Amino acid sequence: MLTVAEIMTREPYTLGPDDTLEKAREMMAQHLIRHIPVIDDENNLVGLITQRDVLAAEDSTVLHPIDNDNSSDRYVAVSSVMTAPVQTTGESASLRSTAMYLQKHKLGCLPVLSEGKLAGIITDSDFVQVAINLMEQLELSEPDETLFE
Image (cartoon, rainbow, N blue to C red):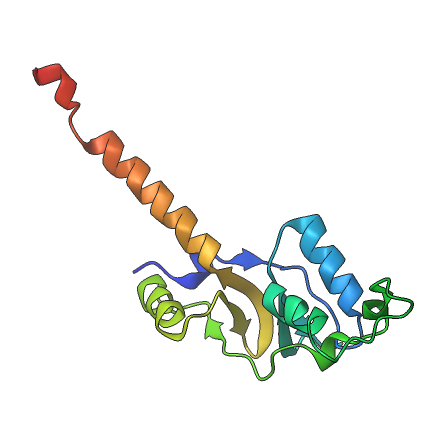
């Protein structure tokens, strides 16, 4: 059985609850990610901020533009817009059950906990990569039909 530990991202980028929405946006853009676990000083998961949370905050009354320049997000704490509590999984969970859970609940990721601490994150992109690898393996194992024409 394949497990979450085999494909998850270990040591994901994280933020603290007092970090700003601006910092979350910058981190997402710089590292091309859409999900950032929010942890406390002891590496306990306290929330999750997603690209969707950032976009929703921009369109909400959480932000009050200062001089119409969208700079107010530098004063908004991640904790005010993050998702909490967060659904999680463990390192030993099966990939199949985790994929089914993500699909059923329409989630883009699940933070991975080990002994109650953040150990990694598994995202829908990780499963797309697995699917690509499986398709490549299938293509390599299939006989080339053009040889028999």
